[in-house]
Length: 244
Image (cartoon, rainbow, N blue to C red; front, side, top):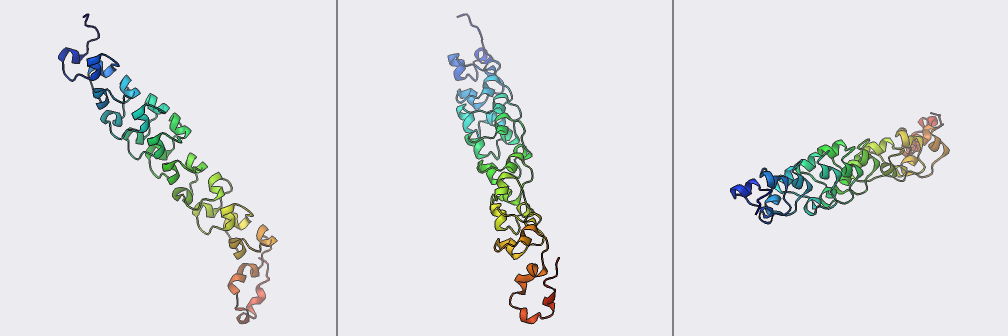
């Protein structure tokens, strides 16, 4: 009967919330009666921001597109707890990744809100791996030197996964050899993507010259194209053994 801690709603008897009626779990907004969210009006699924009335997101204000973490109040990231370093996706609640929605397999950057990549901030040019948080490569994590395969998540090589010894083919995803895919027995040509022989492409019957890329003869380079036309190149074939 002492009438303490009266809110504006108590005084005017308007827009009373469950908390007003029961006098439990009152938020700052309850006390000042400004910018109440749906959750505050119904007293359900309150977030830390709603309790403290600081740095509310669009989702918190409208109660739309809430993540599992926001609905249950579990596994919240540091950014969500403090309202700092929020990404565009978190602020607008658009283009959220599976990890953001389910709060599973979050990266360190997502948990701490630090070292966010351009893709994280703008939600642009996301790879399939980033959307599903599966099979992330070093490039996915750092957003550097992304290959065509990184973007499409197809035909990933060992080098794509480890981001080491990338060849021109790895970067362009053109003319990949067996060696490119398995990262074994790479020749100089594999690395530079220049003067590839049929052996380079098929990884069969490699000679020392193929491996070292030295003293390659014209015959080695053009042999596959000569095929069965030896009877038609009597004098032109004499240059086949000319060293390059």
